[in-house]
Image (cartoon, rainbow, N blue to C red):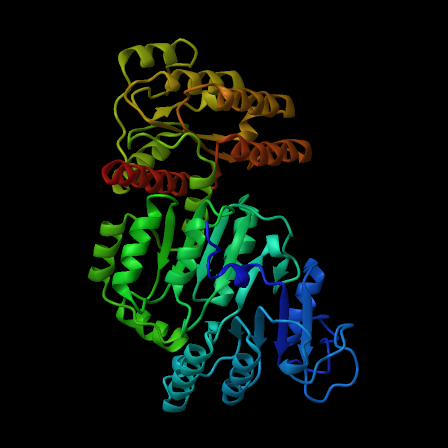
Length: 481
């Protein structure tokens, strides 16, 4: 298989950085500013290629590296040039990139078409012209670029782990990248490639999506999109990729106010809400509307095993009001709550107190929440219920009143996850009450369950919404193939 044209972008052997302050680090934070932050963070993560700081007058080493005065002084081909100079100077740097054969340039600088000003628009048109003549793939301008590529040991933030994972993220917002990474890490996600692409003057979301479609590291593709410049190409590609790897998309800027904000942020062409409704229906891309939902749904695609075969859900929880709320949420999200068979209800009644309990669906019993054995047996019983495709359980682990009971439930659920042909199980597990040891046991449980195929969530609404998204995706795959 031929190497993808973006392979050198995501696996650069050499990086030049133009636009570095010789003042070095901020004494308060220890962080460098401008282009220097890229050199600093590449070094911290252990980038194994060559880094070349470029500064026309610097005599002393920059972050321990002797600077070159210009790109022509660099003694080897440059795969990626990070540009952090002022917007008026960017065309000159790009001309030099073209002269020495730089393959890719990331323009960190803002002040182009997103400004809405004639000068900024003209500058962006100029860099597109230079890129076309010089055959340079440009990330940006006005973006963080390769924000996080752990397999290549590239990151622009110092606190991110070097271990790669299966989730990719393409975003027109740089800050949004950092938020999704840090929030996702807390939910058990690990990342393959995270790209902030800003104005997308040359390389657009479709270019990165095309690469991720064949990237063996990437299993789930997440996107934050404000606007698309080539709608037909994007739609065709998303529909094609989505049958192989799920494409989860947070589309913002569909309202009039959002469209104005998107135009001033990245100069994006947004389109109406009706247009985007048609796009999601046609492509089967999974639509989300917040950072939390993006994270929950990505986690669900990654961990919920096996995927649900349908939209029929069986719910087990405690509290009558909670039961009614859950039923309403299922209805609004398009999930069905079929009545359990008489056989299932009779089996549940054999080990769960009948007084104050409901057995039709949701299974609703507060006393059950105090017994690890009863919850485990309820899961096994619902696993044999023919009218459901997926199980959702909610329990307040503090009700178990002891580390031993929490560990017993954990062991039973891990054993369930190993059973062949079991129904998918998703869980809400909070511990509002309990001592330090109980909380530690609960935290350990919530770490282990997702890896075994049982994702955990903070609320039932988020669980149901996420399960509904993966059920919709499975229906799309069945229809498509």
